[in-house]
Length: 300
Image (cartoon, rainbow, N blue to C red; front, side, top):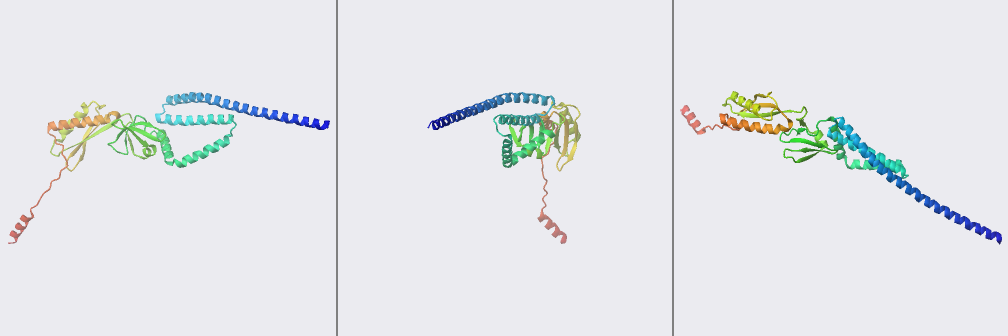
């Protein structure tokens, strides 16, 4: 009986010991989890400061290299994404999450998003080409798709679209893929451009006098950069002789110069009696009845 009692006491002691070990294990697990979470929060806070500091250094480096505004934007976004991926990987490692599973999850999410946003990815790729090929830059003045009535200023090249400022200072957003595939006439490539003004005069007007007037107007215009102006006969149209003038102007003054020169030429032409014709057609009517009578008289 004494031996049985001793065995029971030993069993009770073993049970208590197991409960104490289990309690300590749970407490240790909670403490370990708390340490991991605290370390992850600390890494996140420090990492955000480091990312901000590195992005600032990278931005200043790109400015010193005279990179375009669009390229700086793309490079900053790519650099930021890379730093955030490194930070999230470090946090996941501290929390005990396997990085391989995270990579697989990110890859599957990326594939799903890529299939759903094929058009947007095309715009993204086109945007990268725009900032690397330097076809247009911020502040350039362009004609898009050969449309001379749409004078645009490049405002900003973003990830998926390019914004332009119109003559009325409204903002126009065009997808990058469309901008890349359109014909672009950039007036700001060499820092200045030539304004061209076409004026048609009648065949009866004094052509030499009309050319002298145009030369004088170009020379007196405030937006013209130099005296290297060209005035010549461009075409002989059906009802007019086209006189063309060209001169160097700053890209931002292109429309101002063209409008002011055209207006001034019209005023002087009116004063000097030089006619600017409008399209017209001369119609000759023949009297068929008179023809019949004259033909009958000849037969008699």
